[in-house]
Image (cartoon, rainbow, N blue to C red):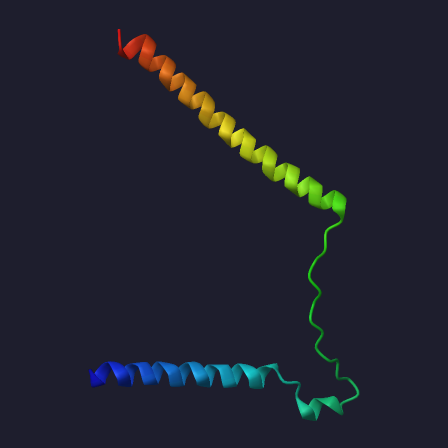
Amino acid sequence: MNIYSNRDRYIDEMLEAQQRELQELRKEPEDQKDNPDYIPRVEPEPQRYTAKETLYIIWGAVGSGLLIAGIFIVAAFLFLLFCTQFWLK
């Protein structure tokens, strides 16, 4: 039982160390702020779609879903036709 608690404690310590390391990496370097060539990090803004582009994407997804559903329906119809005309005779 003690082995598992030590393993869990080790994993927790490793995760905490990684979180601290990530927080340090996200900080702006203090020594570079005084540099005249320093460019601060800028988070990219999420891409926004216009209403027309959004509708185009939605209709494309709906159309492709209907196409795939149509293919399955035709395949099921042909299978039933095969079963009734050839298999059961």
